[in-house]
Image 1: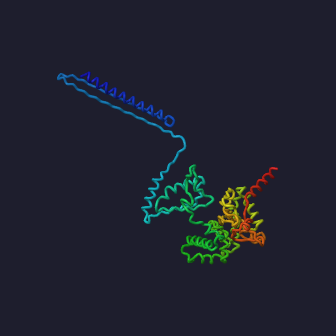
Image 2: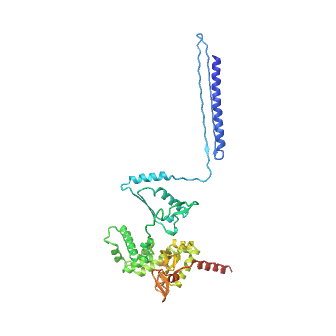
Image 3: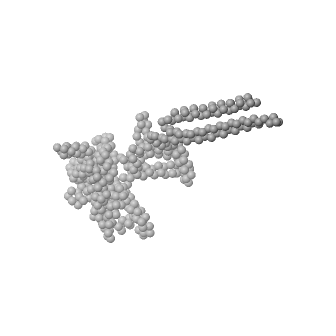
Length: 411
C-alpha cells in the first residue's frame, strides 16, 4: 500500500513539474518574441502541498487525505511606439447609413457639405474617397458639395490608373455654378433678384412682424432709386457677405435718409480698405501683383477685367482670388481663330477702382478690345481672338518685371 501511495505521489509531483516547466517555457518564448515592444514584469507563485496520512488502529483502519493548493499572479505593461494608424470600415459605415435611410419617412437623406476649401488641400481627396465609397452606393442618399473650383482637390491618381477621391464628370457632375446667379455681369436681372431676396429674408428674420410684403417693396423704401440697389449688386461682385457688409456701412452713412449711389460707392471703398486691402498688404508679393494688374488693366487699358489662359496655375492669383480682390466672371471663353484654346475672365474688385469712377481715369468698360475702328470697351468678350488679345494678361511679364526690379535693387 505504501509503495502504491509513493508511486501516486511521484506521478503527481512529476505532473506539477511538467506543468511548471511548460509554463516557464511558454513565458520565455513570448518574452523573446515581444522583447522590442513589451515590457513584462511578472511574479508567479506556485505552492503545492500534498499530505498523505496512514493511520494504523487496532481495527487496522487505513485513512488517506490529499490537499493541493495553487496560487498565482501576473502583471504586464505594454509600451507601443510609432505612428498610430486609424482605420475606417467602409462596409460598416455604409450599412449603418443604409439603415438610417430606411428609417426615414421618405427614404431619402440629403447631406450638404459647405466650405469644402476649409479642408486642408492635401486631405480633400481622402474625404472625397470616403464619400464615394460610403455614401454613393446607398440608394436614397444625395450628397451636395459647395466648393470653389480652382481651390478644390477631389482626387489624385495612383500608379496603375487607379485614383483616390471623386472623379468630377465620372462619379459626380457639377449641377450649378453660383457665379451664374450672383455675378452682375453674367445676368443682371438674376443677380439683382438673388440679392434682393437674400436681403429681404435677413430683414424678415430680424423684424418678423414687419408689414413690408416683398423684397421689391423693401428696396423702394430703403434706396433712393433702383439704380442705387443695382450699384450694390455690382459692388458685391457676387459675394453675399461683401454685399451685407457694404449695405451695413452704407446704411450707417445714410443714417435717417434713403441709401443713394454715393453712399454705396463710399461704403464699398471703406469695406475694401477695411476688410480686404490689409490682408493683401500682409503678403508683399501678392500686393505687388495686384498693383501691377491694376496698372495694366485699369491704368493702361481703362478696363475692369482681363483674361487668363485656362489652366493657369499661379499661387499669387489664387491668393488674390481667396482674398476676394479678384473675381471669376466666366470660364472657358473660346477664340474662333484658336481652336481648343480657352480663357478665363477675371474682374478686379469694385472697391479697388470705385474712387476713379468720377474721374478721367475711370474704366471705360469691362474689357478693352480692338476692332476695325480702333479701341473700344465691351461688357462681354467676343470670340474673335484679334479683339480679345488686348484683354489677355501675360503673367510672365510680371515675373520678368519682378526679376528685373530685384536685380536693380541688388545693384
